[in-house]
Image (cartoon, rainbow, N blue to C red):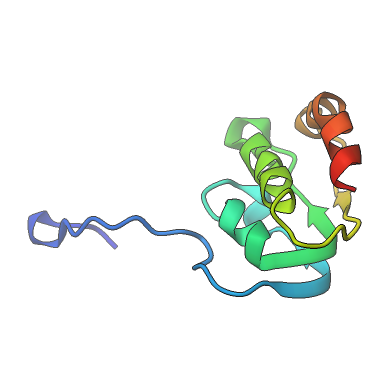
Length: 110
């Protein structure tokens, strides 16, 4: 879909609209954990004990460091101390660096 001069309607859209949270056991983070489709609002709404983090393409920024940071930001706002486990499908440099740099915060957030 292309936007022509008459269709330049500009609106900020989020991947998941605001609303009450949904609690699930297992969630696959969509689109190889690409930040174009997943943001803080996603993790505020879609709360899970386990998240599958796929993506092994550093050129496409998959998995996205911004997505992983969004999870921590959203989890800090959850009203419960539910434990969360990430299940990466690939051993990626992004995941290793993020884990090491945010380990203390992860422990604080359970």
